[in-house]
Length: 248
Ligand code: G3P
Ligand code: CA
Image (tube, rainbow, N blue to C red; front, side, top):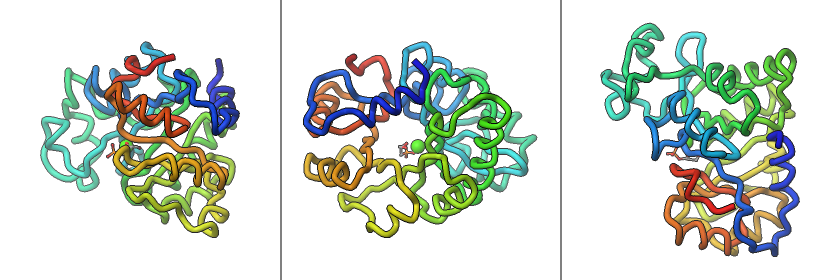
């Protein structure tokens, strides 16, 4: 099933439908419970496990978007220092686990090749413009659809840049708060979804978001009881380190 259809299916889920197996499954940092996070190996594993979507994190370095979660290198690579203060050559020389290199966003898109949706979390400043331009290029030249990608961020500034650069790419607002964003911001951004932490989501939040026309995606859901709990709240999808552990 093409990813655009899958996203439409999410949109069709009735708010009252609590049936199991309807959650949209984003592999969090790739299938990061099974392979080094944010690597092509983790993306490949997620695709093999049948994830509906792949979530990855990006920073802008020189003329590339590099895929890595932390602002520093120490936790996930054998390097040292800040990602954004490093040269691309240095970043590419590092081991991101099991011999994997830190990938570029374009390499992730090439590997996914529309077999799953891609949620690009805009972590670093200055990522929205290049990400929007890259998606537009893949739409124009490689048969991708705008709906194959969701750009998300905690940074409203990055979301605003993305909206200006490429109005047709779905945008998701990341939040740690149980409060919905202002209606005016939602309308200005034409927000597609809200991405909320597991310990902040509730049935009440989900219902309110749905009434406002927002999809609700919850991070990070790894335990069976948590899958059941968010299903019961009627959420639309989850970010999980273990895509296989989701029913359906
Ligand atoms: O995008 C959902 C989730 O990935 C946000 O938290 O810290 O894992 O990037 P984090
Ligand atoms: Ca993330």
